[in-house]
Length: 83
Image (cartoon, rainbow, N blue to C red; front, side, top):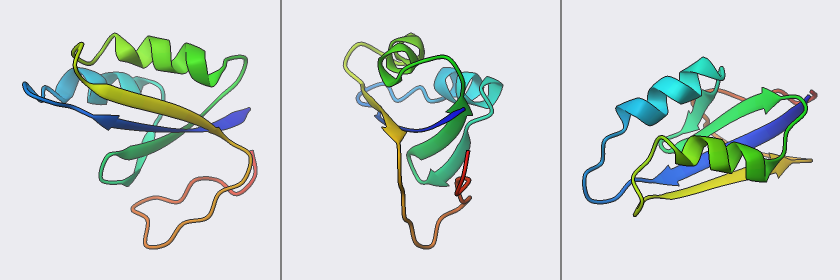
């Protein structure tokens, strides 16, 4: 299992629900206002980016980062320290 962080910047229409629904299906949990984390096996950050890009508009920004180490403060939910 790998730990990924996903962040987005929804512009103009700002229809968050399709993205929220798909992140929930993947078990993603919110850690900051527009930053979520999820664990997943057998994939890459690029593959996850391409998958979640289907749920945002063409002018929206999305980034997926595979974490090797992380640190945070005052998070809504803490990502696992080990995975």
